[in-house]
Image 1: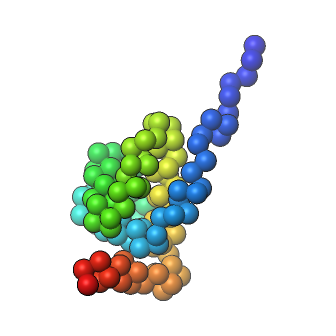
Image 2: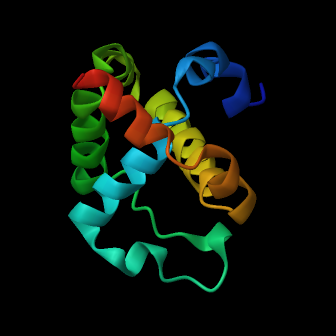
Amino acid sequence: MESAVAFDDIRLDQSEVLAKIPDYFYPAFLGELVSVFGTYILDKETISTFGLNSGTAGWAFAFYQTCEKLDLGWLREHRDSLEWYDSDYFDGAIEEKCIEHCSKEARETHNGEYYQFLLKKYE
């Protein structure tokens, strides 16, 4: 009997796409998640247990809103083109980056990038 193919063997490598996502996307996306789900997603004892609700319609809505507001249509198109298992992996990678951006060190490093983007967009 042949063994099953490992999930990692069929998963699409998305590292190039993830590398193209600007850092200001993540705090903006978190803001959209809060607007959809409320602040309870941030009320965790440890940041690694965020309840970011990936796989829900609310999560997808927040993602699409963020892409629209930041003129990242290519990112929405990319996610829409993925098979369900690749989109699950992609969503998980986005969540990991959001969690990284909520750490104290990240807030000090990336503070204001989203607002700088908005100022440039509307100059």
